[in-house]
Image: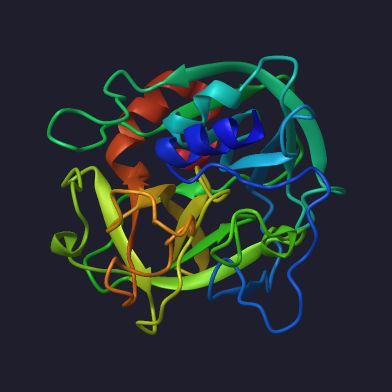
Length: 281
C-alpha cells in the first residue's frame, strides 16, 4: 500500500516520499539535493502534514494571515480539519504556528497531464482555519528574466533514494538557483511556468517532498514569491533503478525543474483572497 501511495505521489509531481520518523541528512550528504540547511528564518514557509501518511507531504507559502499558495497536485492530501499545517519553523516536527486546513481552491485550469504531455494550472490556494501572527511573503510583480538569481526551499529528499530514511531531512533546506531558458524544460507551459536550475550549474535541484514550496527572489532587499515547486523538468518517466532522478537529466548531467509561475496567477490569487491579501500592494 505504501509503495502504491509513493507511486501516485511521484506521478503527480514532487510530493513527499518518506516515513513519519524521517531522520536528518547524515554528514556529507547533499541537502535538497545539492543545497544546504536553511541559513535564515522564513516566516512564510509552510509544511502540510497528515498523521496517517508520512508526516510532511507538501510545502507552501503563506501569502496572507490565513492563506497559503501551494501546488494543485498536492490537493488530494489536503483534508479540511485533518491536515496539519506548520508555519514558520525550520524543523518540520516542532515549532512555528500550527493550524489546519479550512478549505482549498484549485485553479480552474488545473490538469495533471494533457494529451500533449503538459501540465497546466498547478496552483492551489489553501485557507487556514485561523489567522496566524506571522509575516507573509509578498507575491512578486513578475519572476524576472532568464538569468535572475532565485532560491528554492523545502523538506524534500536530499538524495535520490526515496526508500532511504537518511534522504529525508528534518531541517528545512535551501538551494540557490537561477531561471534558465524555457527550452531546457520538457513540456513547459510557457508564460505560466518557470524553468530553473542550480545557480552554479551543478547536479542539484528540488525533489520529492518539495512540491508546492516556494521559489523566491530578492527584490529591493526582501524576499518575494515567484514560484511554487511543480515537477522535474527533464525526466518524464521513472528511473529503471527506482531513483528519483531529480538533480540529473536522463544522460546524467545537471537537471532542471519546473515551478509554477505564481506571478502569472497574481490576479487570480488576489480575486480569490480579496481584501485579505494586504501584502499585494
